[in-house]
Amino acid sequence: FLLLSPFALYSELGAWSTPAVGVLTLFYSGLLDLAKILMDPLDNDEFYNDSVNMDVGVLIRESNAGSTRWKSGAEYLPF
Image (spheres, rainbow, N blue to C red):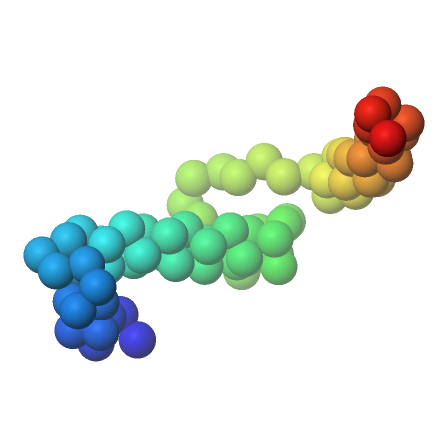
């Protein structure tokens, strides 16, 4: 996918297609790392050498708190 992207983007971006593909590569590699962390929050597969401190309970609490925050935020809309 990323090998052919500069050629596909050249007609629209011109010379900026190469830096755009670099940004796409960073985005997709970061997204892949984040997906691996979320799929294995306890680091059972030893994906990282550094410690990634992810508490699953905190992750669930914060996602629940965010969902109620959005619901109560609708009360402040002007209409």
